[in-house]
Length: 130
Image (cartoon, rainbow, N blue to C red; front, side, top):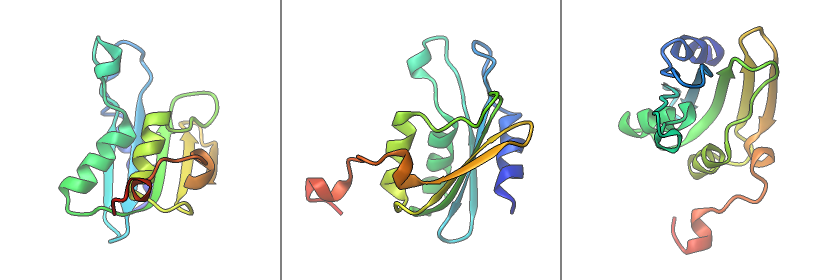
């Protein structure tokens, strides 16, 4: 499945009545399955959910726990990187070399390695965990 098409399709379902800024995300898990998520705003902005977090939740609910590839699409004039919180969430489930492609609705795209989005990630092994 094409991740850009999957992210664009779910972006159309985003609930963004306050900002009007719709975001869609698609994750390919290591298993090959594709999971999608869109942003869901709440009038209390911090209580909303980012598209990437929604896709991660769908992945976990689907029985996968390892990200192989990420694509995010938003309506900005240039490709928009995942927010800081989502970068940290992505690092929890993806290796540093996982490609993250950021797209605009008009076709611009930029791909970077996850490690370049969050070079100073806090990871579980720093806590003695997995």
